[in-house]
Image 1 (cartoon, rainbow, N blue to C red):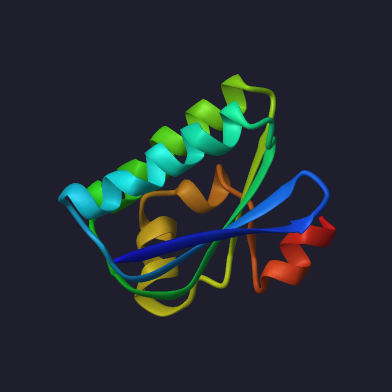
Image 2: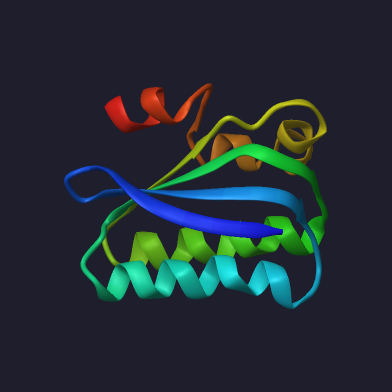
Length: 111
């Protein structure tokens, strides 16, 4: 899994993920990156999942943890670009009713 971030609008950061979001130390970077951004004052975080090829329950758990941290800071978390079995994993767990999902980062940014 690879992770990067960039500011897509004032106070809005996109965290781009590529590869497999699975159990292990690589996916721990998601929560640590959220912590870092919250400390810097970012309150709106968009996760760009368009490059994610697979996800497991631990990977989903990283987003639950991130959501809780962002919400506690008074922020907003948005999901963008999820498709196929990655989107289905969030749907089966009903998390698509908790996290707002958008077709693209641009749509999420404008929300």
